[in-house]
Image (cartoon, rainbow, N blue to C red):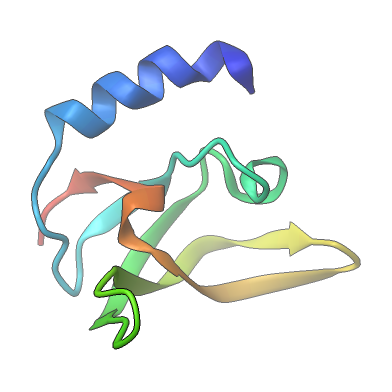
Length: 89
């Protein structure tokens, strides 16, 4: 995943807008969840702000089920900065 860091950082600088419900996003975080979700596309279905940290979270519905450990997931919740906006609704 190290090869992607420069590209990901460039994309995040390029798209620095708030995500809205209905937007199409791509998971671009290179941390612990990258081996499962990196490069996957999803649609934002809801947004929320953490009461303890003030960080924005989004709930997404994956365009295709994503294998996560021994099963597949179609919906996930992550901090919004784990995603890059691809298409605004």
